[in-house]
Each structure stands twice: as structure tokens, then as C-alpha cells.
Amino acid sequence: MTQVNKIAIVDDEQDMRQSISQWLALSGYETETYAKAEEALKVLGPDYPGIVVSDIKMPGMDGMQFLRRLKGTDSALPVIMITGHGDVPMAVDAMRLGAFDFLEKPFDPDRMTKLVKRAMNKRRLLLDNRALRNELSSGGKIFQKLLGDSPEMKRLREEILDLAQSDGHVIIDGETGTGKTLTAHALHAAGARGGKPFVLVSCSAFDETSLSKRLFGAIDLDDQRLPAMEEARGGTLVLEDVETLTEEIQAQLLKAINEQGTPGETRIIAICNQSNPDVTCQESMRPDLFFRLATLHLTLPPLRKRGDDILTLFSRFCEQYADEYGCVTPKLDGQEAAQILQAPWPGNVRQLLNVAERAVLQSRRGSGTIGSLLMSDDEEIRPVVTADGKPLKEYVEAFERMLIDNTMRRHKGSIINVMEELCLPRRTLNEKMAKYGLQRSDYL
Image 1 (tube, helix red, strand yellow):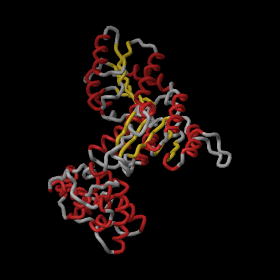
Image 2 (cartoon, one colour):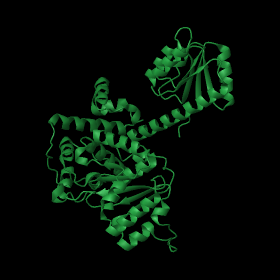
Image 3 (cartoon, one colour):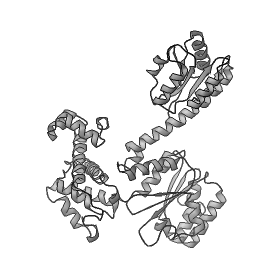
Image 4 (spheres, one colour):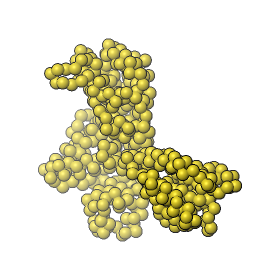
């Protein structure tokens, strides 16, 4: 949870600043006082960990101008306006501009404390939400394998964050190897259930009797495990391969959900593997159960639809395996990069991971090529040009971005070393990094 405890007090009257500051400090808040709005603007950035209390009538920049400037910097920053008697119409205008609320002088200190508490809670929730979005976009912690700058992955990360704030049950579907279980972990970690039980059950790994016992049966005295529905109480129960459930298990699961009442008790994330293109997840389940579970729905994009993400992921996987096996990361040439981009990847990210590991092992022996690795796989996953195709310029740009990204990563953001290795003048390197959305700070 983000630490939010600051209050910036802006008023040209010293006595008023001091009295407000003293009262709020007694309530446990950290206060900062400013005689002029211009001074406060130097401190109040877009992620200021607190709120603002400001007078409306001030010499120089008045409260209304100050409010407009603050909203331009951070539209969600709560601002409580203080107005004198007779200035209520101006305060109403301030509310229209986005002020959180206003107090009319002389005001009740207890009312101010209540307003400040409400504003602080709102600010804390907003900053927590921003922090989660930043974590998703940066690929940190549990989200580190949900990398990619393609529109599909940006949308997926936003959807994960939005759905994580809900208590509704979720169905996740997509092709094999697209990261459905990882997405379930991310949904759990990004929401209020993050510190509560996370129970994963592979439905296809049990026969009907064993699965019924694992999900709903009595306590097993041998392994002292609770049934999964009970073990996940208050947290998240993830059911992999839910399309394999028999009619009997589906009926038991529906009964358990109905007895639970609201999804607030135990959230169920059902993972459906689209291994059979002729049968959808909905068609493989009884309608009443499907619609109870499909309160929220996520479909993961296949790797072949993620464009240049393929090269980004392949490079990262190669770096990880090179570190693990203690060898140099293999370098791709233009032809190999094009082969990787053109391959259909029916096994998706999981297949890409396997090929990256084999590429590292092969490079360590000093033999083979990426193309030979792809060709050595099963017939259906050979590197053929996809139906979509793309212009040569896009292949060149994807390869160029990968080279700069890899070199920046290897040199830990040293611009001088990257310029030398790639034989690029600084201005050209800066322009290309801006073009491809690469920032030096990400490599330090």
C-alpha cells in the first residue's frame, strides 16, 4: 500500500496556515505550508503522496488559477478549497473545475479532519492503482513474463488490473502455452486477495472420484489437506483444464458456488484450454455453470498475433538460459530474426521458451542455427511465413529494436558503450531509442 500522509497547505495568511497545520498535525498528518501558490507548484508533482488544502483568495496566483494548474499536473489530486463568507459561488465554480470539496470560514476543525480523511483515502486508492498499473507495464515480479509492447499485451495487462479489483469469477481461455496460469497468478496478486490463499487444481490430472474428493471431500487425514474449496476460502481457487470436467463434477461445482452465495468468499478462476478448435469452452460446459463462472472473461492472444514481442521474449529467454548455463548469449542475424517472426508458433510462449533454451545449448557447443532448430521440430511448427505477412521495413525495424535493446541490456544502460558497439552517433541512437520506446533508465 502506498504511503499517503502529506498535506500541502497554501494560504497567504500566516496565522491561518499555522492553525490549519497544527490542527492536522495533531490528527497525525505530515503538513507542508506555503504562502504562495507558485511555491507549492514547485513541489506538487503528478504522484504527490497526499492532498492539498488551499485558500481561494490569494494575491498573485489565486486559488482558482492554482487549482487549474494542479489539475493540469495531476487531474486526480484532491484539493480542498477554503473560502471566505460570501465566496460560496466561487467555491461552487471550483467544484466544477475538479476541487474535492470546500470549507467556508470560519470552519469547524472536525469537519476539516473528516474531509481530509476522505480525501486521503481517495488519494491512497488512486496511487495504489497507479502503482499496480506501473508494475504491470514494467513487467515486475509476478508480471515479468507478461512482457511485450504489442497492443494485445498492453490491453491484457490493463484488463488484468481492472478484473483484479473485482470479486467476480473469471474464465480464462486461449491456446496452449499462452500463459493462462500465469495470468491467473497475476489476477490474484494484483487484487485485494493477494495475501490470501491461492489454490491451483489441474482437473485433467484426476479421475472423477479423486477430483471430487480433492475439490469437495472431507479432510484427508493422511496428508492433512483441506478440500480445495475449503482450502481456498477467502482467496482464489484456480481450476485448470475446466473443459475436462464430467457432468457430475460440474453439478457438484455449481452446487458449491450456489451455496457460497457471493463470489466474495472464494473467487474461482476457470482456465479453459482451447486445444480443440471445434469445441469452445462454453460448449464443453453446462450452460448454468458456464454463466456462473464467466462473470468476467479473458482471452489470451496467441504469440503469432503479438508482432515484435516475439523477438523481445526470445532475447530475454536466451539471456536467462545463458546466465543459467554460464555461457554467452547467442546473437541473431537478420535472417534468423525473420525466421522467428515468421514462424506460426502453435505452442506459443512455451514453445518459444523451449527453442530459446535449445538455442543457448546449441550455441555453447558452437554448432547449429536457429533455422535448423525450428526445422528440427514437428512438421506443423516449421518456420513458414504466416498468412498475415508484413512489409520488409517492419522486419528490419523489429531486428533493429532487438539489437539496441540487447546491447543496452548487456552494457547496463551505458550509452557510450552502446554507441561504440553499434557504431552509432549519439543523436542517431537517441532518435532510434525514442522511436522504439526504449528508455535508458530501464537498463540501469
